[in-house]
Amino acid sequence: MGGNLLSLWQSHRQIARQSLEKLLKTPVATAMTVAVIGIALLLPAGLFVAMDNVRNLSSGFNSFTQITLYLRDEVSQAEGEALHGQLLTRDNIAESRYISAAQAAEDFQAYSGLGDVISQLEENPLPAVIVLTPVSIASDEVALLLGELATLPEVESAQLDLEWIERLQRFLQLSERAAIALMLIFSLAVLFVVGNTIRLAIESRRAEIVVVKLVGGTDAYVARPFLYTGTWYGLAGGLLAWLLLGLIMLTLHRPVIELLALYDSQYNVHGLTLLSSLALLGGAALLGWLGAWISVRQHLAAIEPR
Amino acid sequence: MIKFDNVSKRYPGGHQALSQVSFELREGEMAFLTGRSGAGKSTLLKLIMLMEKANQGQILVNGKNLARLPRGQIPFYRRRIGVVFQDHQLLFDRSVFENVALPLQIEGYPKHEADRRVRAALDKVGLLKKEKMNPMALSGGEQQRIGIARAVVNRPQILLADEPTGNLDPELAAETMLLFEQFNQVGVSMLIASHDLSLITRLRHRILTLHNGQLIKDAVYHTAPEPAGGMN
Image (tube, chains in turn green, red):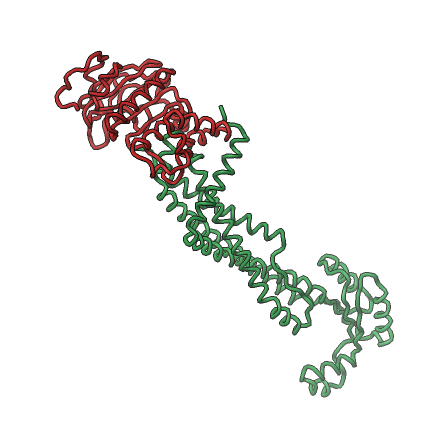
């Protein structure tokens, strides 16, 4: 008989087309469902873009990683400057700045507002420091460099100014988790929306289902148009979310860049990459299919010819 | 082909639709099933279609015990049986052609092969020129013939019909029966439920008579008998 792969492919293509045409026949109802799915997908997609940008932006912060070397009191200014010169020649150090004890005291007086405290002291309590920027920002390499510098005879202690970056990273991790939780919740919402829409579609096509079952349609055959319908809903919703996100990015792009410029950042905000766009559309289609599948499993078996 | 062995069917709620019905329809045989409304004709056909299950007894179709057919096999079983329904069971969201093509589509026939068979079936019932129309726009008799074309399009071994002439005028009814006889002549086994005794007795086929769910008569009429007590 006829059941070969080619005719299966033909049948799938035909059913995919028919279910799309059916959706387009009721444009208003379809548009409303698609809008709900699109908006439900927009939030997680938007969060993803925001998180992605913040992550990229914050990885730029790592170039602010600095190592502060506190020099021993007995190290003279000449020795300190010599060490500074010597460190500068190293491959793994990008920048170095020597701040003498006197300079440090002056800076402290100028910026801290506690200048009087220092001037009342007989001796300058501040040590000379060398502030370094490592070339590599990989944490293990930085740690290695830090350990090495701490053992230098001139160095009292070496300190990595990473605390605030770590705090930021932690905060980002937390927000990422929250974003994932939101994504799951909104994906669930999409499942329910599609599932309910498909349930109504099944109800309205009850007569057709009965006939198809009577002339020998398998459960899989009966389910197929609904699964395609669900997939179309998901895909259309994903496309809508993608477009809305693009629109939002377009309107927010300039203000955000201007805001960042105020913080001396050259960072360029980006939207969804090609890959994540495809992931959004694919994921949306999959959600649509899954919602339909759940609904079909629940409601189709109940419709039997009587 | 179809063998009923002491088959009983009681619906939930207590209505006894069939009681200990036994008969055998041989391959290539044509038989009518008659009796008043409610005598159990539709139930008997539904049992063969596996739309209902018997409570007692055994039904063999093509040597297969229907009680032992797994649920997943039911669609494939139904594809070997053509059914003509009294209410036609057509789909009004598609053309005549697509209605008839449905069983082939389900079976996954290649398009060119399916198209050829649909046209042959439509030609047989005289509706080839109306293939693009919506069944809604056609008369009751024409709708009935669409249903017949759909029932025979995948060349079933068995054709069942439930009151196929119920809504037709006598002339159309006779034509429809003639069509059934033609299918029977090419080897299709047929079981046709009809209460139109005056018509079916003229046709000289086997007639199974049901009364209150019991098979009370199984005979071939050669001459038109007196209609027994209001059976018409």
